[in-house]
Length: 93
Image 1: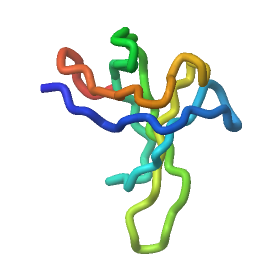
Image 2: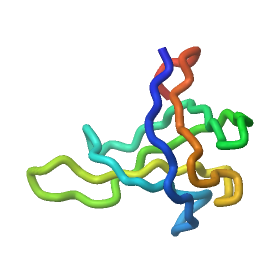
Image 3: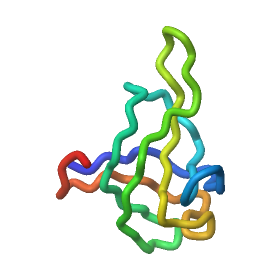
């Protein structure tokens, strides 16, 4: 079953390809993971892509903060309010 991962507050360009998405979240692991995802934009359009989980801050014994990177998109492709969902027809990347 598809799971909503987050509602985008901001997409911005940082070092590396594509965009990073805010808000950041607490990650289960600091190991990067690839996920097949669907973007559901506020205007009702959808786009399939791949999200990469990137650890952005390790906090000692606390779980690390992480963000999703969409390496093939620009900030204009991911407006605020866009929902990031897992694809229910694809296994882990």
